[in-house]
Length: 88
Image 1 (spheres, rainbow, N blue to C red):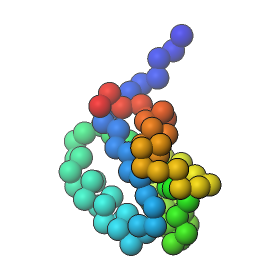
Image 2: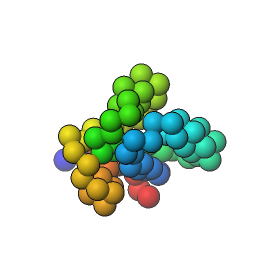
Image 3: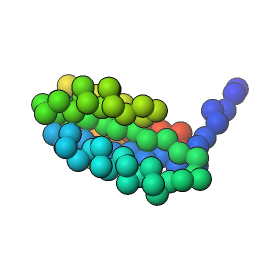
Image 4: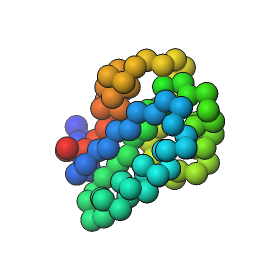
């Protein structure tokens, strides 16, 4: 069995209609994680503010989950966790 290589840190962000803030959040994260092997996972809870289109066009190198309904913060965190590969 081949074990998947893990990154050091997984960062899971839950988004709901925060298109105007998500870019700023990612800029801040990218400054803080210099030198840390990482992955960023964004779980969008069915935003209706254009977040999905913005994220797909503007944010490279990030994993996405786009829900068809607002499933709540905890469930969205768990969805991100399930696909994460980070040690932390």
